[in-house]
Image (tube, rainbow, N blue to C red; front, side, top):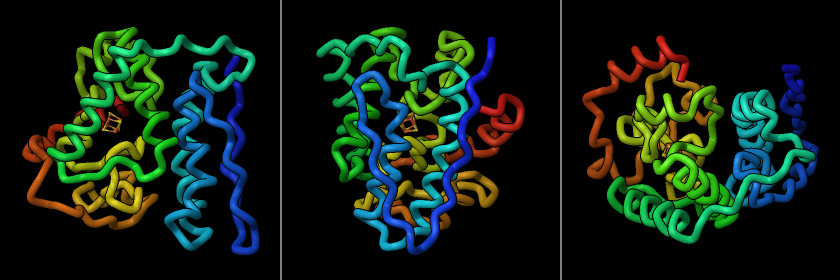
Length: 216
Ligand code: SF4
């Protein structure tokens, strides 16, 4: 199968205007990353932050492009059922409260992630994270690592989809290992409520071992 080459993340200069926000379609929640490039200016004053997001989006885009999911000619995936969307929304709302985090302040970002979760609920009966590419979704369900709220969220309170964030819409990175990509991209973003969440924090060593073994 031929792989679609993913363009490199754009290099932004301080004089550049904010990149235009690509249109979010119901069939492509994974374009949330691209959409957010244009939205970062809402909560970050500098070009640096937009550059960070562009770099962050690139790995996900590469994975999705490899699967053909970013091909605009491809048939859009089916709309999630109302029941699946309601379940996705319940998960998001209850877990943001339980974990002491906030749903992203831009509703288009939140809705994009919920659409992906809803679609996976219909397809797999489980809310598999929509912001990643999986060679075998059923096998991934058995690992449990990326069933929402995923291990990174329950261990480190880090949500790379930006569904669960701080009040300004930034991912919480305070608890991540120093060499985690989230820390490299976003720097140190403090946990707004350290008294909540991180139910699996004792499993950090196990998680890092898994990350080395499975690159997941
Ligand atoms: S990164 Fe984790 S917590 Fe965030 S949407 Fe994906 S599975 Fe859920």
